[in-house]
Image (tube, rainbow, N blue to C red; front, side):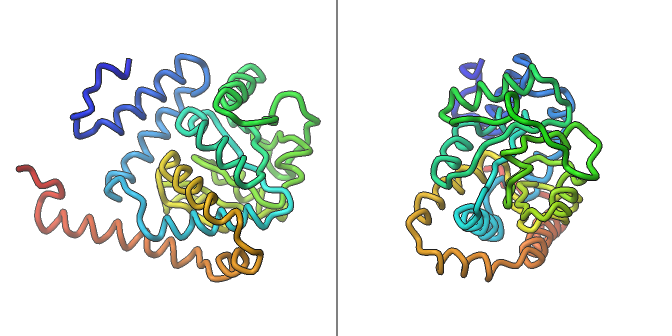
Length: 260
């Protein structure tokens, strides 16, 4: 139903994303709780001006460098992430050599299979999640603790998006480096991850595809330098400062959108 939204609409991109999520909900890929989660993230994106800030780009670069350095990187995908960025996930996987695994809190094998098929239609190869040897992440009792032994269980680096904080903590305890895409810098996920990408998931993944296309031929020394120089606390601080600055400006002017 995208044709009903004119490209001239000032909220075109945001409305298209909402349509994508609603369609994915109707197909059984996104659950109702995922729609609520998207709305919460969108509120933070409004405050950030719906763009990728320098601190987000630094985190995205560090994530790509880490993936290229990792022995067994995995991109963990839930329903929302697949609905928003399946094509970009597939391309990022191709450029970095990362495996793709479907991992869900509201898990049914039918839903896992639907998400895997969506990813494969968009170019992802050998998506894990349904037919694999299962393993359990220690200390994580939710269905998200059920993972593929050859995927997340064996990974040394995991990229997560639109995540619940308890799994990020459990993955860290399991000795894995975790990068998280999360528009809410206050969340446990954002505070727990080694690398926090405070950016919208689709936009962030597009950025990482572009970065990966430039870094994939870089030598190991350059990649290690990018990771070594990355400071997640500073990135989170910059995210908070940017939000505070935009809110302060709005409080002073009473408006942040100039209407002609």
